[in-house]
Image 1: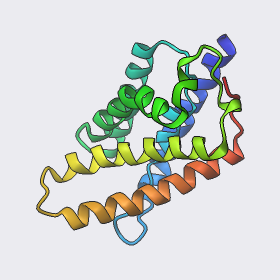
Image 2: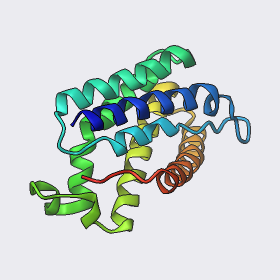
Image 3: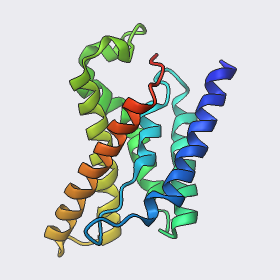
Amino acid sequence: MNNQITINIVRFILLVMAQIFIFNHLNFFGFVNPMVYVIFLYWYPIRENRALFMFIGFLLGLVIDIFSDTLALHAVSTLTIAYARPIIMRFCFGVNYEFQTFSFKNTTRLQRLTFLALLVVAHHLVFFLLEFLSLSHLLLLLKKLLLTSILTLFLCVLFSSLFKVQSE
């Protein structure tokens, strides 16, 4: 158990540092900025305390906000997907998620990719809706949402394949 806590703390710190020092400074096409720290919410153990998970999700977003100067946009977005994660899991994995014996090992790669994609798109949708605070620039919002989600999803899948995570 202590090993899992240590691993999660190291993941948290490394993803925050990678986001702050590397990915915040990448601007593809002038406006696409990948947000790879979202993968922490994908990697976080399933059976952990939900309130603690939501607090850690909020803290993750808040730390990113402090260093990115984004006025709590990341904090609200990560808190939203931390709250919605069980709903998204139930959608992706069906009734299997409800059982105590659920494990990512027993799911298909497509189910895991769908779960990660929904987490990323939900995070980015909340983030960009709050950033624009208006639907008057709907096409720009959709363009940023689509391109940033695709790039973030690609990088998250790459990280997942490079750093194999122990499944519950």
